[in-house]
Length: 289
Image (cartoon, rainbow, N blue to C red; front, side):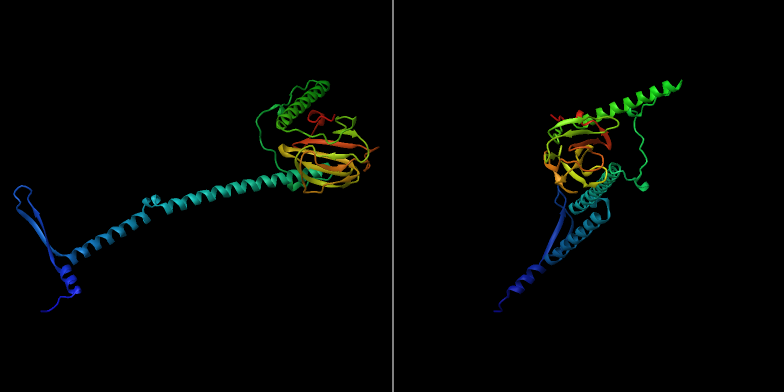
């Protein structure tokens, strides 16, 4: 007797026909029917699977449905994040550039140097505030002079008020313990403090040294830029303990009291405080006792 091999059995299994009939639900009358081999059914199922896969790929690749794909959503999110990051970087670069220009121009003003014309920026339009108030009455020279004085007082008071609001939460350290020999005025935009020789001068707050060098008029001078648009100036020092670019903390020694420069007549510290590039009275912000 001839022995049937496994492959032959498998071949017979695949080629064996299967009948699929459609019957009437009530009479069970045969309405239609087809005969297929198991191999044919496998190919038919494979064909429909490939067709379904192809249609899915086309729909998800070339129609709006592709947005529901995780990879597409992830790519879109990444693109949006990249755009936001670029915007932030551009804004930071602009802020750094403005800050650098502000510091450079301010140093030029302190040192009596001209500000390059290419750095001059047009003033932006601002809302009406006390600093922009102008009196229009022009009846006489006396009244005009009085009006100008009132305008100046309004602007100065408003500026000082804004500076004080900006300094809330900040404790300014006294730069030197001593006696105030000369106070703040329009002709003397700072305070002079007399103390013993070799007394250390300290930074009033955290900041970065933007200038530390000798000047003919003020001798050894050091300028520190602080947060919230404040800037402090220390003049006539005998020695400087910090250099430009150093980051310092409140109370750090930065210089030694001295009598250097042409504009001095004895050992003392001439101290000035600025807010937004304009002198303010240090006594309004710092206790020197």
